[in-house]
Length: 136
Length: 338
Image 1 (cartoon, rainbow over the protein chains, first blue to last red):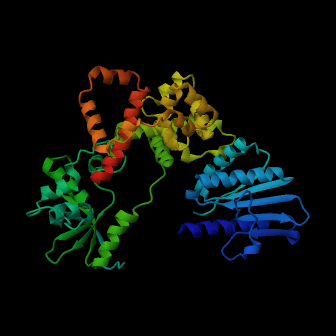
Image 2 (image 1 turned 45 degrees about the horizontal axis):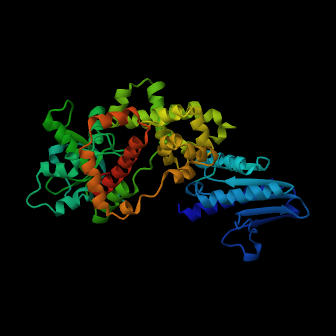
Image 3 (image 1 turned 90 degrees about the horizontal axis):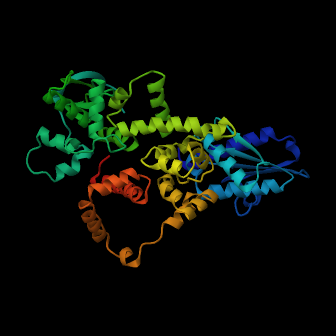
């Protein structure tokens, strides 16, 4: 499976999970960074990094950021900086959740990385969700 | 690929013709004058190499030891039936060579026949497809942690003796022992440091393999820490990338580097240690530098080696081990050993 294709599958699962778990779908905006998304509908950049999914209820306070990573793309500087930026941003929000989608075999690795970054950035209070049993 | 005419049979090794177009030996064949005898082919396939147990990948010697311990091969070779009634080996030349050498050396066992998948016909493209799938794509390897877990299970749950495991793995005793010890350390010290079990990260395993190298554990203890401290450093990614573990003895002996390591990480600490070489040395061509190092190593006194052994965490010993690691990698690349 090509790397970009594998990433796209993870993003799709991320979107499915988000749509299934938001409490008020009619008043919630879900922005997805995908090849078919129009430029104006893409997730906003957060400290220079665009997440794969950005979700916010209209008039609501809760922010959800979703990020998908293939197994080979977890442990590098770009990913660390990106996760750091998302965690710090979500800490500043009244209520925020970081949802991470990686292949099943890399779940432990990404949990370990996010927990480390949470300690490092003092963002332990940010809620995190790690999707399980994904292909790749 | 067509499957008509495909059979698995036990073939006499005297009916097999080794493939002189085998990519593994082609570069040798191209520069060889005269007829290719079996002994020459054997040499080309790696019998003459002294790779022993130093390598981390499957070598001629380790494959040989594994086949001997197993009493045969597990995966059949792949052959093409020739009009002469003999068989051309498409995949498995090294294994056939090993069988023949066992027979000639009188090694105990049946080395007269070998399991083979027999093709009655194969187009040139199909032969290439077999070679590509076997050597370019290859089987999907297990990750190192899973390998170690399996080895440990064989040893402790199924009570397979270590000597037998080592034989089945082709004699790489040092590597097998390090894997098992690393697995035990990771389970005993790293897992309990985690907030929850789902944060267990098997990709940290190589740090624990590095921990088994000479002088590393000793240097951790000498600096007043223990394996739990090491596990916490791994968890907190102070030892990232994981080969920075090799620099740990030097870091922990250097007060400034140690402080930097504990405050930030090993990569930052290394910047304090790695003072650039004086310009006079930095500009010397590599050949000259290597010549000087070789000359120096050739006259090294036993007392100096003994001193390094006693202080295996010391700067000299650690730099020598680091140089060995780097040189081994380059030597493998240069000699084409796999």
